[in-house]
Image: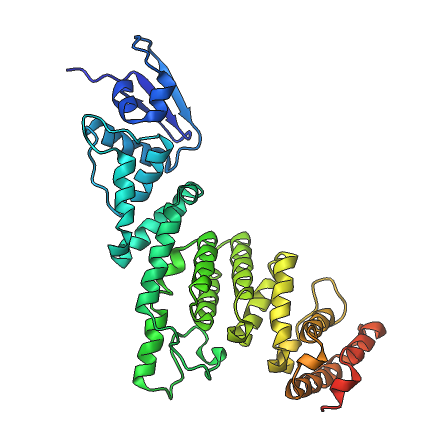
Length: 379
C-alpha cells in the first residue's frame, strides 16, 4: 500500500517534512482545526511553523507518535519535548481509545519526584533548551521544584558552623582543615550538587536561586555556589556571555544575607567586572555589598587601578562609593570597631594615593572628608 504524503510541513526553517495529513491531523487539534472537515483531494498543502518548540527534532518525535497509532514511550529524556509539542499542537484528544499525548506527558510529570537525580537534570536541561515555551506551560517550574526538593532532602540546613567565615571555605567545598571528619562530610552533603548545576543557563540559575531563598536554604551555601558558577563559566565564553553570568551572579548575591557572602570573593567578581562593562544597576549592587563590609578590606583591596583613559593611578571614585555604602545606614548603625578599622584603612589609603601628581585636589579633599570627624575619634 502506497504511503500518502499530501502535507508539507516546514518546521522553523530547519527541515521540511512530507507527511500524511489525515494521520497527523487526527492527533493534532491545531492542524485539525486548520484543515476543518474538508475531505477534498487538494494537493500541495503546506504548513509553516516558525516557533515550533524543539524544532525539527521534536516534530519528528510527534510524527512518530501519530504514525504509531498514538503510542510512544514517555521518558525523562523526551518528556519535555513531548509535553511542549503536545501543547503546541493541541494533542489533547484521544483517538480510538488511546490516551492523548498531553494527558500522558502530564501524568508522567506528576511522578517527577520519584525520578533519579540524573533524570531530573536531563529533563531540566531540555526545558532550558526549549525556553520560553516550558515556562508558560508550567513544566519548567515542576522540574525546578523537584530539583530543589531533592537538594533539600539530601543536604543539611547548616552544614558548617555559623562561626566559620565564608572566606575560609571559598569555593573549595570543604570546611576548615581543623574540623572533624563528620563536619567535612556534612559540608560535602551540602555542596554535592554544585558541579551538576553548571549546565544551567543564567535564566535557570536565577529561577533556582530565588526558589532556594524562598525555601530557606543556607545563604552561605547559595553564595558559594554562585561564586563557583561564576568562576567556572568565566573560564570560557565570549565577553557578552561572561558579562551575563557576572550580572546574574551579582543580582542573586544581592538578595541574600550579605553577612553570608564572602567579602574576598566579592572583590574577585569586582576585578572581573571591571573589564566587562556590566550594567550600572549590577555594578551599584556589587559596590553596596562590598561597601557594607568595608571594615574587612585591606589596603591591597582598595588599590584598584583607575579606569582606562584616566590619568590618576587609582580608582578614587570607586573607594568613595564604597565609603558611601558603608555609611549608608548612618554612623549610629556602625560599631566603633568597624569605624576604627575603616578609619585606619582610609588613613593608609590616603597616604598611598597622595603622591600621585595627577590626583585632583578635589578628589584628595573628598577622601579626607569622607568619614565624619566622629568616626575618626575611634582611631
